[in-house]
Length: 258
Image (tube, rainbow, N blue to C red):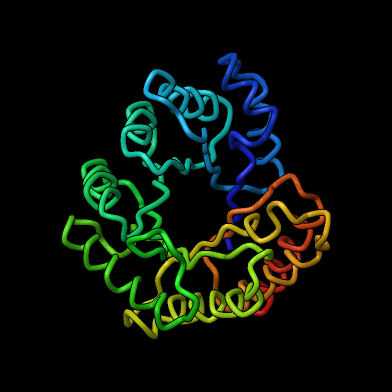
């Protein structure tokens, strides 16, 4: 299970200030620390950007690739922002993310195809809503896979994210269980006759409710997802306890495979 760091986002005060001042040093310090912790991918999310600030995505790309060998995930709902980052990427990145929303199908999907980028398929419907049940998530996966194929993207370049809900949702535990079941279905090959790559944003689980929910909830959820065959987890790579749990899961998984 690949660790992908989600530490470089605009809600991080260190990153927000660096984006304002175009100061690469704090961004690079965070990136180095994430790589040292074991991250192989790093998510670059500059947040909402008006047109005159869209260069911030390129700034993040250039800052990070100057000091680390991690692969990049360009994270924005706007194709024009993703394009700014793609223009300066040295290596093929991942784009985050395609949903069933028409604007994203019309703009992000052709961009991924033109640049032969890997693409996160986020299982949200045309109204950007997450289905509650596994069967509905699978239906979205089938629809989005066909759209990606039509654009010329191969299955190996698609990473399916069933969407991990926030614990503040009234039916959060039910939806977490459905996400785990969806990962198992996708990763096992039962749906597409071959295993596919899966990813979840683990940090979303406790976002905004960290004072009221123990950190161990993330570790438990990570264990369930790892057992279901999760390919990559997008998480706080600077959370020492979480990374420790991830390393232990990786060690146990490797020994079980031997």
